[in-house]
Length: 401
Image (tube, rainbow, N blue to C red; front, top):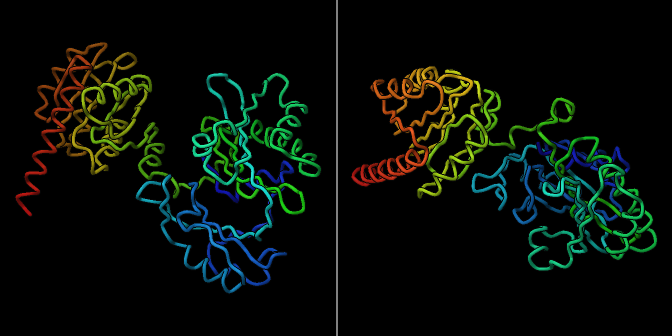
């Protein structure tokens, strides 16, 4: 789960990370003269609160030199849909703004903590090139990417923080402030089950002090049960509505850009299914794991999610009947298909207990359900059906136009 910038900064402030005093608003009138944070520079920065980077390039970060200008620009941003290269063409809605005083910055650094899955360690990534996308830094200045791996047994060591501070070229005040800042970030990362904490930029001000100008935090969804306060503040308006609906139905769903929908029981099997679709010349429209104990209700909910995607031209259902018998699964698929009025070509591959009986039930259902017992054959079949459906649809649309 992602936090908004203002939420991330509130969390980090609790670990003594220096952040600017800000005002969060959801209406321009809330930016009253006596509510705006003090600005020594006489200017303020107005930041759209969406779950995406590259906001500035998309017009989501504005500077105002008066209270009236703050309110005027806030009115322009609030309610807007902001499109960045990270959001995709649909963009994300702006419901809240963070208003902060501008700072006089001498240098910008990049600092982040994330998990190195291969090393099974928390890793610190830093660079003297702050204010840029880290991917861009890695491409243009690969030698400027600094990495620090933390041993989970002993945690972050003081000498590691000091060594990294020297490598970033810090001196005097900034060098003294850096180790406790990095310690605070590591403590926040561990205590709140984070996947990522990113400060970009970590600014060195004209005064020599360090200040987190921007902050991004992503939390591990598996830790929701022990991070209840943070997850209660989840902003579902920033998430794919289909994925939100899937979670409410107990399904694991991720939207993709293809045209062939997948419904599978088991995450590993789902990944293999998508790979085979790709290998057969198709493109998966989603990752969808209905879980081991598949029920008619779950299958129906899954079909509804799939059919809500206008790009879908065919469906591949791949179920291994281990915990639940294949004949019961087949009956569930038939009942769910009738409930949602399924018309898209659908290939169903059943394997496991009573698989032959399950395939017989599908074949005799009278529905557009095609049974297969080989996964590679099922993938090739659904790709062929998808292409045929798309061609037929294009022909019909061409005739009508």
